Image (cartoon, rainbow, N blue to C red; front, top):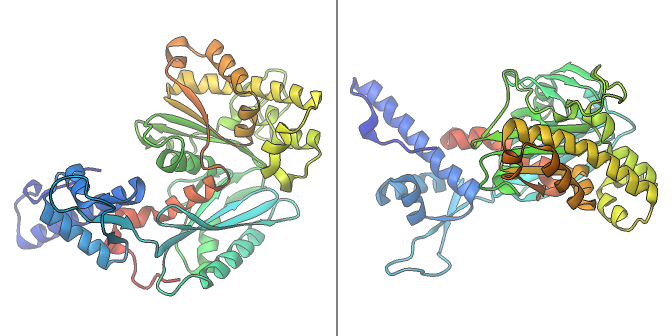
Length: 407
C-alpha cells in the first residue's frame, strides 16, 4: 500500500479539498498500521524510509494511532547508528478479534491479539456435524466467556469465521458447506445478532493461505499455493503476486475437487475421483486406531508406528496429492507450496517421495522454481487467518473503529 501526499490532490472548493485531506490521512494511517501489524515492531526511522513521508508527518501519524489505542511506542532496544535512537512503534496488545471454525465434529473458537498471538483456543466437540443453530449457540457462548475475561479497556475488532465450504464474497453467505450439510445459510449474520459484534466469513483454506503468507512459512513470498486437509476435507488458497485469488463469487481454490483418479469413487459434489475422496484424514486415523478428536496427535502416531498398512496408505495418498500439486504448479507457477492440517503430516512422513513425484510430473521449468513446505502456524493457522479477516476493516480505516468496541 503506497502513501499519498497532499500535492497529489486536485484543486477544488474547500469541502472537496477537506475531503481529500481526510482521505489522505486515513490512507496513510492505514499504511502505517499495516506495516506495524504485519511486519512487527518498526522504528519511526524505518517507517519514514518505507513510506517516503517526512519525519514530522510520521510522528503525527504515529501519535494519532497511539491516541486511538492501536499502537504504542517503546524505547529502542539499542542505538545501532549515530544520532538519537528512533522509538519503536509496536501494535497494541489491547486489541483482539475472535475467530470461529465450524467442523464436522467440533466448533473451535479463539481469541487472537492484534500482535498475532493466539491468546486462547478452545475446541468444543459436537456429536456429528453441528446444525447452524447449534454452531451459533456454541460459538456465541464461547465468545461471551472469552470477552468477559478480557481486561478492562481491551478493544474488540470483531469476529472472523473460517468456514469449510463455499462462502459468497459479497455478503458472507455460506452457499455450501457439504460436510456440515449447510446450504445457503447466513451464519455470519446470525452470529453477529447473537454476539452484537461485526462478523465476517470466508473459506477456511483461503484464510489459511493468507495467515501463512503474512505470519508463517510464506512470509515474504508473493506467489504461493496453500492446501489444507482436515476432518471436513481438503481446501486451498492461492496468492498471486501478493494478492489472494478469490474468483468472481469468492469460490476459487477448491483443490479438494481437483480430479486425481479416474477409477475413484463418487464425491459428494457429484464428480468422480476428487482429491478429497482419495486423500482423507479418517483413513489414517482408522489404521492408527485414533478417534477424530486425537487428530492433533497424528504426527507422533505416524512417527511411532511400524504398521505396513499405514506405510502403504501414506504412499497411496501421497501419490494422489502429488497429482493435485502437479496441477497447481503447472497452472499457477508458484514459488511455494504450503501444506496444512493432516496434509502436513503426510508430507512430513515421507517428504522425499512427494518431492520426487512432483519433480517428475510437473513441467520442469515450473518445478525447478517451487519449494514444498509444511505450514508453520500448525494448529493455530485458521484462528490467525479468521482473526485477520476480522482485523481487515480496522486496518483499512484505523480511525473508524468505534470507541465503544470494548471487551
